[in-house]
Length: 491
Image (tube, helix red, strand yellow):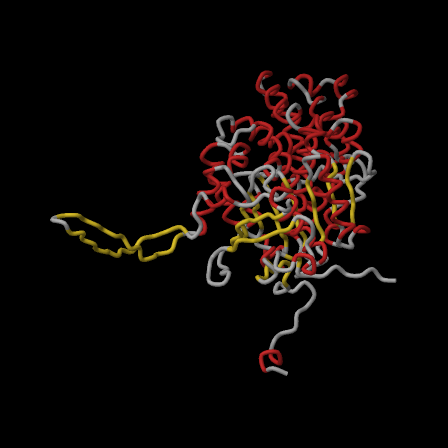
């Protein structure tokens, strides 16, 4: 036995040193590396979904990760059915969609956790406030009054549901808000009280939780503050929430999936399930987008509550610009301790900036991309993305020789001078020459891989070579491979 093997600490299950991927069948990328996040950039047709995405999915599935998958295109779901089947995880797939029968009452889920932690409705309000912010598309904060007022409306609505011990849902929230008193006189009107869902819940809440601080705050809001608002102001506050967000969850299908009794939740992911949100944005539009963001936000919050070094999980999103939130860059700063691999794929940085505009949005995008430590760049025509990638890798100082030739009096003179210059490790235009697969390239795809703080044979980057046909070392030879072999099914 070699001395270093004798003293080496044996690997435990899901040890962070365990390789997941062997770049070019040689350079390891580990479980620990995955927790620091991955950002994949590349044009449409560059091969990122058929190579990088498929490779990373296979590696994490074979390692036993739980996971959340967000979908944009209808074919994304079918691709994940294949991913699960090809990597021995078919039994762990949970497809959450309009025809799949599951329910995740995220309001109930977060309110119960908030009650246990002593933070009430704060996390549930935070999720809905993020949706309002996205719907308003207002990263600059020009209408911050309406956002803050909508946050107050949401918070007191949720606290009222909690006090009354009602099953929370967006449909109920809309009914409470729609039945709120429109004037101080109406708040005292017996006829209004008899027909108002808002008053009925206030009465139930007073009976069950009337001595709590949260109930007293909710009662003061609904009976004093809300009815005294100027009519146009109140209408704008209500519309900021109900028209931009709540109504997307009030259809029969969405209410069934998010307003009933929970049958699937982040805890299933922590137990090893792969939840695929089968509500592709191209089919379900804003409702599908908001549903995916709700799932992602709840998983992120639950991960940060989870204690101990447990099963790793992933959050996987192709076309990730549809699902970014203000919370992403904050979550990513603690993702390693949460043992979560964030895998995002999009065409270019401008996709993110379009969804997070303004100077504040620019800083959030920069922060998020910097916190995703592994970057993979496929063929890319977007200059700003290529330049940011080259800048992130950095430059090296080299000695450059220049020649000088002169002619005079029948003689040629020649001289050489040397000077130190800084040169990009990867030229910003290098990604324009990468292979994109398909018959024209014999199914070969190339991409530039960099991992902050990691060297590949002395360089801060690696030119990864993929074959679109398979990910097994026996087929690829010297190509990129999944480090964990596919387990043979038990007989």
